[in-house]
Length: 544
Ligand code: 3I7
Image (cartoon, rainbow, N blue to C red; front, side, top):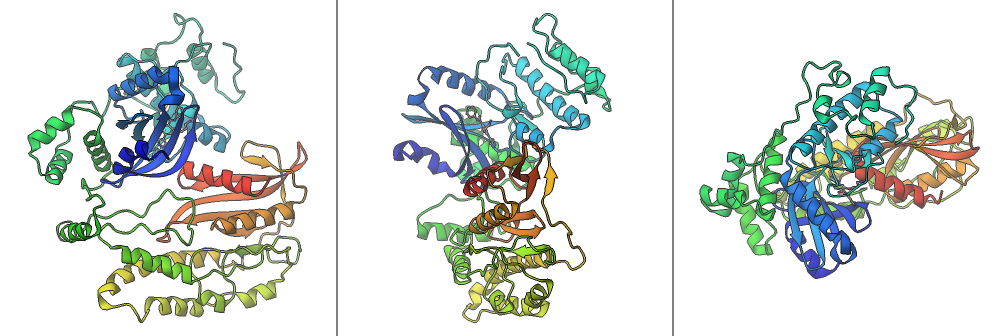
């Protein structure tokens, strides 16, 4: 990072992982320091942009003029000598493109809901005198509420938009609609106005698509204005004046992010920024008394739960707690059993991995997996596994011991009880998930035969067991918890508070055409961007 260019953005935002890279741009997830809200930041290199710089300026101008429920909101623009930063609304569901791929194809009902949103956005864009001209599923993101948001304005594309074939599963009415929209001659093409009440979009709906903005520019929210005026100790009028300038500076960003918080039913509250330690402590004390409810959520962007990672703490809890939790984690190495593959038929097939199987080892350990042991697969029989199972009473003892840490002084006890309460809840979930079920035994002793599909990665490996072992080792290295059922690994990641942040499945399968061993993947829960990165990371680490 070139220090000077990032100085300004880092004042206001905490930068996290990269979720996309284009020619001269990259997009990073970030957190707005004052509101704690997640955002996406598009970072462009001015030097590399060269002739494309006017296009970026056009994109920024367009986005400043557009405020609509299905358009990714621009919050803040920062320009430095070398970079342009566009702070944008966060859409955890990722690209519509990936979503469609993950489902193979959408049902007409779901396609209709999405399509109504796209038509709504486009009608609004046109009403404002703009044309997007690069409409594609990669440029439609899915937000927290599973609604679409249009991105990437200012990219000029010459309409060719020509010949096409219609998938066989489409109904005649949707085929007709496509035909009306894909006319090359603009005079023959259906207008957006007609689309709003087209029969295909009206099936199951009584109203035409509502394209008018629910968030018109110009109206200011009183609660957000009040919070800003209290925070900055300035009159309501001067805050109104500053917001109304719409400079897309920190004031615009803070107002819009507060508004977004309010829309999602959260409290309209600002946090105090990071200050030198003594000042911060004073501020925290003031805050603790004035707003005991204002908290930082424990949702994070991070991919896994590394032992060394810091824990998101409540804003008025001091550093001490963060260190205590990290230290405890560091002191509690996780004993990992030898990866087992379903080689032997006699072997119990619902296996628990990345968990301590021995009670003695368990006493010392908590949630996260650490060092994987790369060993050849060892067949294990059901008796052996049963003998190694963790007895419920041992589990309770272990938790109790930890909860009653003798060295905790009384002022810390309350806070630690909260942390351990959360750890305990997390532990309960882990135990429930990881306790091998005696009833459900999978009888599968060979991988499923599947046809090649976009959710399946083909590998050069020939032996499915070898591949399964490889994946298990990588999962353990990346601190991903998993439960093995035959050739399927049910995986999950957690935040430091034990909250499950992501769930997905990996399955080693036998591909028929072409004949190969593959990995099927499916996201079940969690941020699509983080999932995409983690999967890419796992697959490349498996050297498939
Ligand atoms: N195909 C999209 C990749 C990710 O890109 C974005 C993600 C978010 C917001 C904006 C973009 C974007 O504009 N990307 C881009 C466009 C043109 C060239 C290069 C990059 C996003 C992520 N979460 N929430 C919003």
